[in-house]
Length: 360
Ligand code: NAD
Image (cartoon, rainbow, N blue to C red; front, side, top):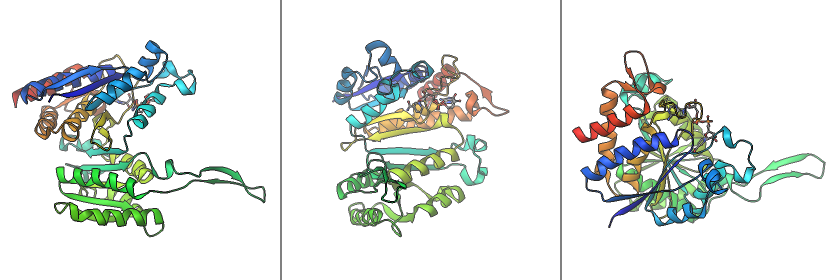
């Protein structure tokens, strides 16, 4: 059966990087006979302008009917003054929660050709390829009770609740174990079980699940040590799984090991492996419409979509290899440009990846 992909280009540089990604997908669709069918929908500022809301019902309907969603970026200064409930970002949060996308996959990949872009020494990060699996809809960011209360002595106190139930831990564990099976077979679960009971249970459940995945080697690490190890020797990691708050912090730190936001893809998955795939960056209004945006984060997001939701790892590998070829050729958009390489625009970068795919 053909797979349905909903493409949401969004605002700012969104439509520009989406056009290039579509070119690349059209090539793999033919080359690997994937039978992908594409549809489009509005979200964010573009949706607000056209329909009066940032997430129109029809977008949600189409999203529910699709096997995967490929998304550019939303937002921009044009909508800074609209009501909070109607902000473009609200549409994005609504679609994520409506589709129950609890599993956030954020790879931090450093192509050896870009090792100079990292703040760490090239030999520490060259060839880095980590996947952080972050629980996205639970933990302390959502736990109740929460708030700011006034104590009997008149002093105010802020409080939040860190909790995870077994179901929540098992479903993110499943995403992480399965991701490790598709990669290097190593899974490091990050917690703070020396202090937090919620993560004692987290560790226990991960241990319980491990025998079901004999091809995955499970280890555990306290979050403070994980932060240290990420900047000391990041290449020791393959897949990291952790809760919402630790994942928020560690995935940003890992992303920065790679030096460029224009290269980083992400995925958010539901229980059935259906997902929304998007670059980690925003709509970059400062360069929108100038043919300067790096389309590679979105192109690499499309590769993740093929691997994790559409069951086409060969096509995913082919896209990632094509990106490597283009970097080998010395082509760079402005954000990853360095002396001795060739500066190109968004369109030329998309064309180069599509051509490399055709050629190899
Ligand atoms: P941003 O990621 O859009 O931009 C930060 C900086 O990185 C800018 O200088 C931008 O030019 C550069 N940049 C980002 N992506 C790039 C790319 N592909 N190629 C080259 N350079 C790139 O973050 P921001 O400036 O904080 O936010 C701008 C808008 O995007 C805001 O409206 C914000 O709400 C929205 N936003 C959307 C998402 C999303 O759609 N998922 C995420 C973050 C921010």
